[in-house]
Image (cartoon, rainbow, N blue to C red; front, side, top):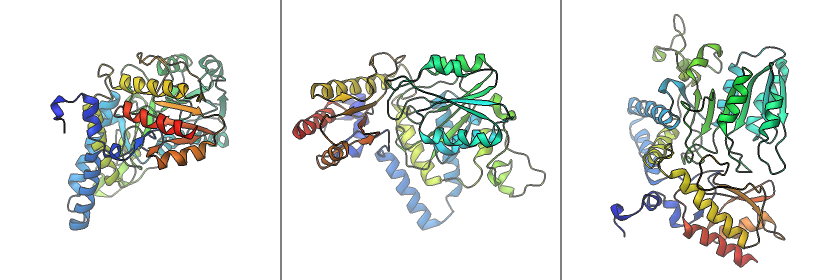
Length: 394
C-alpha cells in the first residue's frame, strides 16, 4: 500500500471512500456514499445511544453546533445564518411560508426545476401570489434573458437551482442576483446539486437564501442538511414551523416570556436528527479538508476534468448527449458540472442501468436518459470501467 504522504490528494480522498472497493460509483446526484469516517461516526452514535440512552446528548448537541460552523465555512456565511434542517424540501417550504407575501406579488422560477422547488411556490397561488414559470432553452440551460423579462416590480423572489439535476447546467448565480436585486426581488437557491464540489461564497455572491440536503455531493446520510438565511432578512420573515427549539433558552421548555432565537436556528423547531447531523458533519469535515469550498484548491477543477474525460469516452462509444452543453473543464466560471446525461441509441436505459450494476457500476436514469454524476475521488479507472462495460453492451 502506498504511504499517504506519497499519494496525490485525490488518491488520498479516494482512500477515504470504501465504495471504490466494490463499485465504480457515479450516482452522487442521487445519493452519495458515506466516507469511512462518517460511517464510524454513525456507528459510534448508535453504540452510545444503545448503551447509555441520552447520557451523551450534550456531546451530540455540541457536534450539531459544529455542523453550523462547518456549513458557514462552506458558504462563507456567519454561523447564525445557518439552520439545520432535514432536507432541501423543508428549507424551500420554510422560506415559502415565512416570506411576507401580499396579494399581487409574484415569484419567478424556471419551469424545469425539481418538483421540490416548484410545489411550495405553486401553493402560494392560494394566497394570491402569481407564479411565473420560465421555460429553459432547447438544450435545457436556463434562459437568463427570459428569466430577466419575467421579473418586474411585483416580483418578490426568484427561486432557482444552482445546478440542474438532469441537465447538469450550472447557473451563474451572480447574474441571477443582479437581475433580481435590480427589481427589488430576493433570490432563493436550491444548492443541493452543487455544494460539496463547487465553491459558493455568499460574501461575494449576494444570494438571500439557500438550502441543501447533505446526502448527495456532501456525502452525508439522508435527512440532514441546512438552510442559509442572510442575516439582513431575519426580521422580515415570519416565525413558521416553530417549536420548543425555536426559542431562546429553549431547554427551559416554556413559551411565556420567551423570544424566538435571533438566528436562522429559530427554524429548526424541534428535536435534532443527531445521527444524521453527526454523519454529515464528518463528511463535510473531510470535504472541507480537501478544499471543496476554495476556488484555489483545484477541487472543482478535478470534478470538471474527470467529467470531461467521461464525456469524451462516452462520445467515442457513440453515446448521444441528452443536454449538449459545451463545457470548459478548466474554468470555474463555466456552466459545466459533474452531471452528464446521455443516450445509447437502440438501448433501453433502464436495462442498461441494470446490466451496469451487474458489472459493478452505479448510475441513474432521469427523464429517459442515463445520468452519471462524478465526484473528486472518481478517477480514470472508474471511467475505464464504465466505458468497458458499455462497450460490451454493444
